[in-house]
Image (cartoon, rainbow, N blue to C red; front, side, top):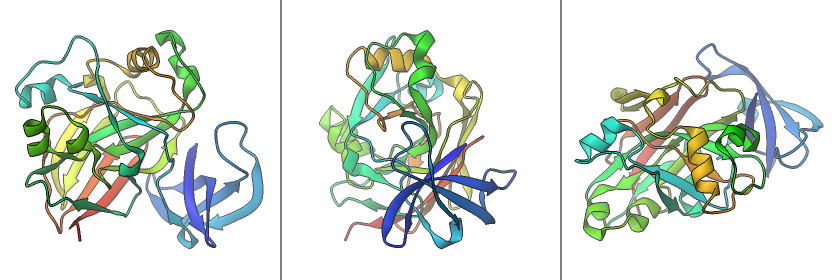
Amino acid sequence: MRIVRVAVDGELCFGVLEGVSAENEATEASLVVLINGHPFGDLVPEGRIIPLADTRLVAPVLPSKIVAVGKNYADHAKEMGGEPPLSPLIFLKPSTSIIGPGEAIALPWQSEKVEHESELAVVIGRLCSDVPAERAHEVILGYTCANDVTARDLQHSDGQWSRAKGFDTFCPIGPWIETDLDIDDALITCTVNGVLRQSGSTSGMVHDVAALIAYISSVMTLIPGDLILTGTPAGVGPIAAGDTVSIAIEGIGSLTNSVVDRG
């Protein structure tokens, strides 16, 4: 099931998307079954079924927090000049960094080297803490695509990552939440202007999704809508104003954003 959040008739609504292509892309025939309230419980249709074309997709969730994981693919850790940490390396991105599909990544004047990072994002579906790894599946609503945009020069100069990862627009997510996904071996790619930059698989994670949920929930309480960004495979690289960046995950679909200079 694909859960979307859409702007329609001046309001933001959740719904269930029906009618996508074999490549998990929206089509002219795609429909949205609008639901009452939020998706963190029983989904109750509110009575309207509308063409997706008559709506605007927005970020599928607005989390209270975004917990991201660094160096969780060995090949990416190597390209960054290091080894994967023995325990998950976690950091926070602010909720104000969230944007949705089709919105622009705005390059800040403080950085001269902003890079893309394609990632699988886990959407938490219920209040939880101290979750055993074997029960992690019980707290997951679904999965979406994410781009952990990073000001690489500031990451290196600051010695910690809050500024480099935290600018407004530095966390595109979407296009929807897929609730039924095989995450053991899903292809993750990033293209910039149609040129392939990253290509990896979730099978390359050092710490899998269940282990990440167990580790993070032992540190902090997770609430419905929170996001866990699970790390990026090798191939990160620069983006510039005028670029178009697409993150695609097998079984979910693709998230596309333009790049502009911040005005």
